[in-house]
Image 1 (tube, rainbow, N blue to C red):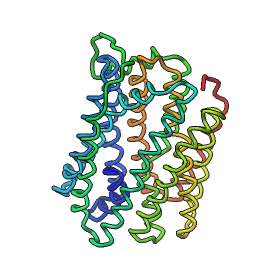
Image 2 (image 1 turned 45 degrees about the vertical axis):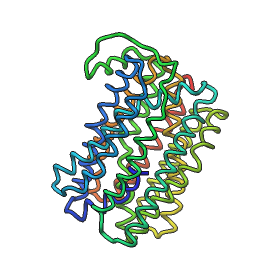
Image 3 (image 1 turned 180 degrees about the horizontal axis):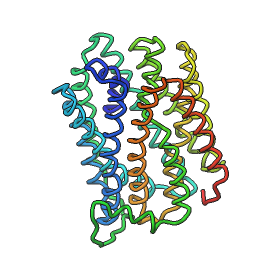
Amino acid sequence: MASEMLYPVMPVFLKSIGFSVLLIGLLEGIAEGTAGISKGYFGKRSDATGRRVPFVQLGYALSAISKPLMALSVFPLWIFIARTTDRLGKGIRTGARDAILSAEATPATKARVFGLHRAFDTAGAFIGPTLALVFLYFYPNHYESLFLVAFIPGVVSIFLTLLLKEPKTAMVEKKQFTFFSFLSYWREAPASYRKLVAGLLFFTLINSSDVFLLLKVKEAGLSDPMVIGVYIFYNLVYAVFSYPAGMLADRWGLKNTLVLGLFLFAVVYSGMSFSGNLWWFGILFLLYGIYAACTESIAKAWITNICAPNDTATAVGSFTAFQSIFSLMASVLAGWIWYSWGAAALFLITGALAFFVSLYFIGLKTKA
């Protein structure tokens, strides 16, 4: 709720303080890439120490602290620091949190467990922007005040993490390692892991920040409340479909569900290349919400089914670390394409490449 309260507001806020589309892409890319590298390290450290909960608690604390930091200054370097602090918190908690979820599931229920987590997470992503929309309705352009309001649910999340108990299944691996030791997992991991992650990373390279989708909606002439409203609708669809998508994946197959999601992504991005009204974007964001429900939690469930239980945080952390690096490149590349050739070119190219990625997964033969 705290993070997503600000996400649809960020592109509007950044443009209001003088950020260009290219600089917005650079900001999102660097924040995700710089902080994302920490996902591999802290995932590896969680496995090595056999601890999960402290990483989750620290991660949520940093993300909460980043909210009031955004309100202190509009100096570009400070904005970069505050945004990266939020993403660093995500990097610290991701591997350990997903390891806890994996420990609570069996291979037959893995997708629905991750889907349930995603449903609750995205419910917060629905409530947050809704509150932001109400706040900006009464206090237009008071972005700094909204950053302070977002600190409140962030603090609540910190206290809720104190209720977590350390999983009894956590295993300890007493080895010395450095910050980049997680990179060695690529060589040690099963071949099926490498094939799966290779496909997911190529998709990440073409899957730029959702900020560009919101900028496209804004460019089409929709008002700020409408832009936020579209994003709220997307998160509502995402939340509603996440658990059913997990149940579908457990029965129909993880690969089949993931391919369906990638195909929907290709349709959405191709559709975004055309101008439209609120109804047009509403249909596209409906499909985009279903795509998201069929991919993110499904991919993590697939990865945790492939790796050994004592490598879960490392496997997920390594993937998400590489994913963040590729997200950096994706956002910077997307900003450059938009700047050079326009929005239509960006969305058409992305849609076409996503279709070919779906074909790769159709031909992928690995445990799912």
